[in-house]
Length: 247
Picture (cartoon, rainbow, N blue to C red):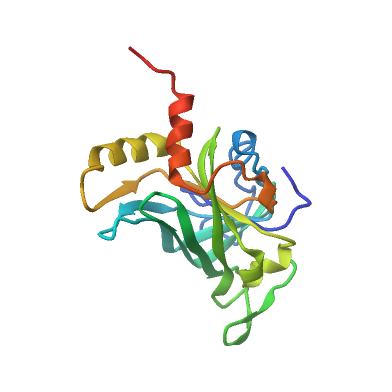
């Protein structure tokens, strides 16, 4: 883990730690090397956010594709290090990623809102869109960014998006020094997407709901670290290479 690196946004479909308390005994640990290995994208680190993520991948009437991930109205977690985390109340997480008809990534955004009761770390007071607010008792913009690049990881299985540091806003940007990334990961992501896309290739519109989804945002990612072209076709091609042909 890269403890010296800035903000990680971890958004995971796992039970939230320390519900009902201000602080949990231990932070959630993401899968080892998520974002590393095959893609060359750095592994995840701290601090980070995580929460459940309901993911939908859709083909639109225009022929383009959209991936969304969201969760709202529940308690998220803000991990300050491998051993400590804080509850994020009234959490709202929204991610949208747009792909053209050829499955090449176009653009997207990620937003996290909420407040962190009892938080006594750096930067409890922040400036929101309408003026200063105390992050410990008033929900506000914890993090917003435009998504500018797309990548995948096969071990563990994940889909990642790099943010544009120039557009990042909100309380969590104080931990940043460069671009961040959001990772969605699940043991069934490839089977779900590949199977359902294959079954619906001839249809004008469709929508796939991906269950058991987890999401993580990694340490700052140098642009040169992305070894995949920005398109979902890279995902399909990589999957085909990873699975031996059978008679």
